[in-house]
Length: 143
Image (cartoon, rainbow, N blue to C red; front, side):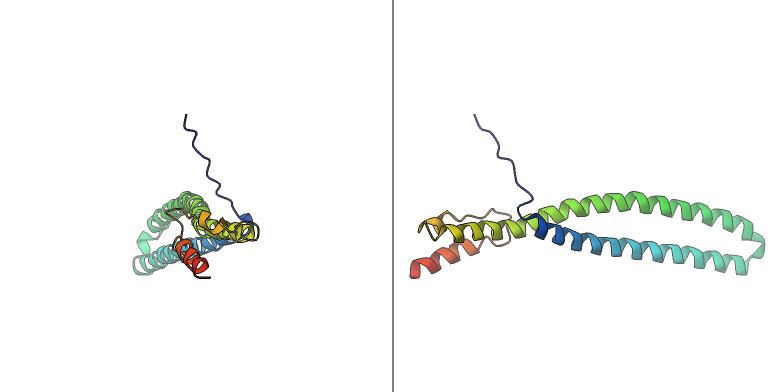
């Protein structure tokens, strides 16, 4: 009976946390920048309408307050979604970077006792450094 192997996503938690935090910080800067620009545009539009048509001031204030509340609500909802996707994406991305380094380090440690350890080095299809294994094996064969 086939029992699926559980994937270990946190191979090097400290390094993966750093990569995920960098990704989240860039996402946060982007979200805040977009929000600030939209909010500034709303305020500028309200100022222009109030200055050009004073009779519409009360209606414009009410309308734009509703728009601000909708913008704030959408920021919160989309912020939570983007933050969640950022955490998941950061873990997956860091796993594809750190996983091969972790396996390479493990094989290099084993090479002191097992000369055939490098032949066991395999990377997953989605790993970023999958082309290193054949190169290292070729390098060792030359010596």
